[in-house]
Image 1 (cartoon, rainbow, N blue to C red):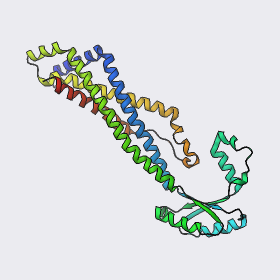
Image 2 (image 1 turned 90 degrees about the horizontal axis):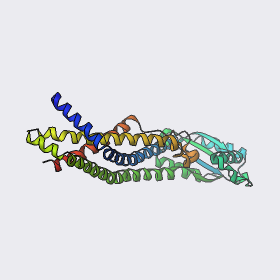
Image 3 (image 1 turned 180 degrees about the vertical axis):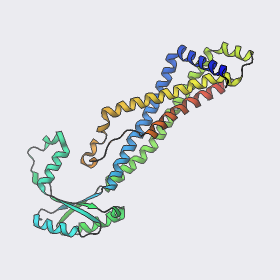
Image 4 (image 1 turned 90 degrees about the vertical axis):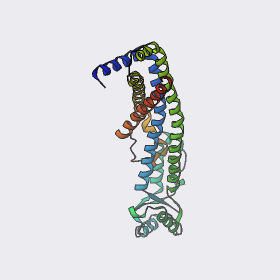
Length: 298
């Protein structure tokens, strides 16, 4: 594109943004809300994925002991369990320690435990598994062996929770694209309508340019660029709102998981994901405006 043509296109874009400022801003706002929903799903999905991976890397099995098992018997049982090839380390949790851990997990709501007997919680052995023994079959076999040991009342491990979270992640992945697809279509149509308004507002100018022999590309370029700007502005607004929401309530996302989320760091979208969101906004704006221009400018 020649320098004169570039200056002409830039001037027409600036003029349209100034004359239809609120229309363009409203369109960018709609796109921002669309991308905010999509980015929110992406953010939650990423952090729940970290939670699942964290559990997989630090899987523990809990063997709850019968009331008759005293400290000496628990020590013998602990030594026996440490000889299992799947077990890398064990930890004995007394009734008293279990009660303190439970109160700590409840945090500010621990007052609801007032008047309850600490002995209601059983003593237990917490087993840390070796890296090569964390598959579903290996853990299931270990749990079956533990359940058959004398003195072990119940065995618990977070596989059920992990499976539920995996299903939740799959569901969120589908919902993100289904809901996002509907919202993207709405934003796409709104961008097209905005460009149509800009074409109608400059219809006389377009007809004059066609009469003097202006090229089709020169006439269409300002409208496509306006759509690009709307898309990028909407994506930037979405990222800003998402970042603000992350700063306010981000740490609360993993709170429902209590101690199970210990050590898991809630993180914002990485650089590539932010670029991906910006590109998605640019693509929506460009495609919407290009289609509208093709439709209304023969």
